[in-house]
Length: 328
Picture 1: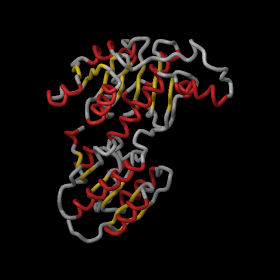
Picture 2 (picture 1 turned 135 degrees about the horizontal axis):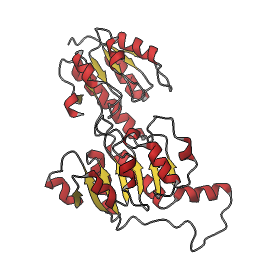
Picture 3 (picture 1 turned 90 degrees about the horizontal axis):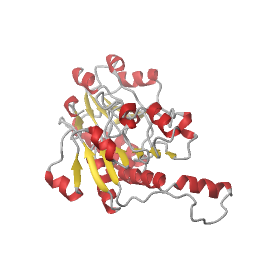
Picture 4 (picture 1 turned 30 degrees about the vertical axis):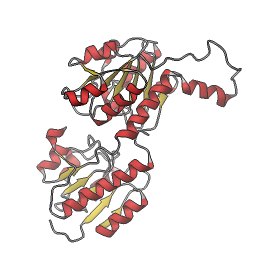
């Protein structure tokens, strides 16, 4: 690949200094604002760039890639998750895909723990009383929640974020259990005092809290389906900071409404930003607008990773964060 200035199309506004550095290195055009591109605009971007810098709001599927221009050789995703990109089709067409792993770990785990605390300690219910001006003072039986210490946390997906969740939960005295495609080696498992469960059903049945930390792939779609959700204790809660598609949201909603689960803390949803309206009505559910990685530090570091991937590619080398289908 030539080191000449390559044409780069960015689909959303990025941190100002990231955009400035990108403009020093490449011929950059930012076509988005604070709104996702429609399909026609995204197709035009694919036809008009050597490098595309999309975000998770850009669905880049096989039909769209079929219309990509011959110049397009790298999709440098601004984000860790790539389930919105058909990586296999991109590879077949000679287009590399990179992402930004690692930089979101601590922030997402912080949010997972915050959601866990908010649900178990009924924080939003307490906040509502204060904001509505209906608090009548302390009472022995008012807004009783559940302590974390001594409870079992079941982690679904023990990658970077799952392990970061485990470290935080251990500090609160929780017992760590997990299900993963592969068991962690002892050097990772033992410091966390974590118990591996090959059968997801067993993990779901014993956990007081389930934390979803696995990516969305065809094999994880509705991994927590109606049958598995029924295995959970009625006193258990579920927290999801990963991908909404992992949970059957309709089944979860029915169980929460029926009192068959104690609560849920959700930062992601099965239909993107289309939140099930019945979830909004439930006092034992905490809903956030996909804020898991929303720190200034994370956004900056994501941009820096994108820049490194782009410059490495421009220099004729494999991007350090290249994604290949076998990784998914």
